[in-house]
Image (tube, rainbow, N blue to C red; front, side, top):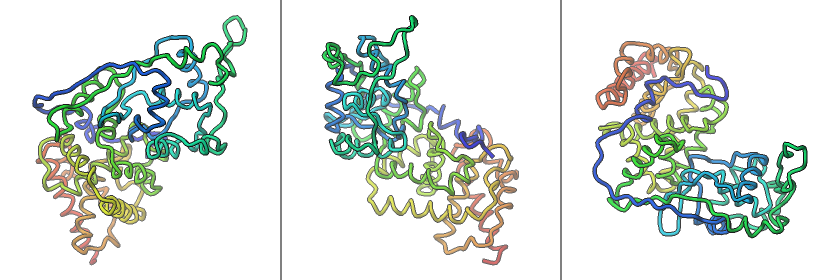
Length: 395
């Protein structure tokens, strides 16, 4: 099984999602550099104009790292630029730079978030447009934000150490007006298709922006459904199946869930590339009703309940790596058979693991595993196999 802090997935499972590039049409993309000073950043976050999408759920910096950024701004030193996606007029999603922007915001509020409360704070900031005075004053959420800076090489104390925003003195105005360069990106045409923006960020990533395909997708297609994926990813039974106690910070585990749900929803219509297929599903999911979101979550919970009684190695057919392909195929088969009134009680999970090692499965799962013929072949082969197990068990 995998170590608790990592996910080991078969290399062929997700490689096309990371590297795949299809033929692209012509697009009209606008990209413009801007310099927002810290006062503007603070105001935009307060008003909900700048929000954090799902690809990085929580603020992760400690106070020492945050203090170094603030010191750089006080001194007038340049800091790395920020990338924002203009979702609509005066509404921006942070693509890269969440830690820097929120550090400025928290420092100007003179409050530093407790680690265990950061996920909750992110939700409050995004849904309510900033933090109320009541929340900022709540010591269950925050501690005072005083700069923690190391001594100088001479041994003398750093003159900014222990300062807060209100005690910056003569440096406060300089800090207020210090700009942070940001690049705002917007797709102009086609209006009904976000694929150009996806491709642009995919290429931007290869040039140095440290975002993978799933992180970009989480930004561009954020929705109630997408937010719900993070909660599905935290289910105890799922973490045990995956062999990883903690969610993967690069969202590889969420990508596995998303693949399973999208194939279950429209696997019969799969064609082209896995990236485009999942993107289309995510686009549709933006219009899902609350009942639609709940239905997907209910199916996920049902399957986890079934798989909870299976052997831990069911989806580890090779022993060393979790097979995302076997998992998603089994998930799709299970939901389909459930809809047909079949019972899974008594299904031998060891047989599923054996099937994952068999030639019948591997012929659809080697190189080019996301080609249309292989995806459909793998889903159909797994469905027929598990249906046969149910018949054998007499259910």
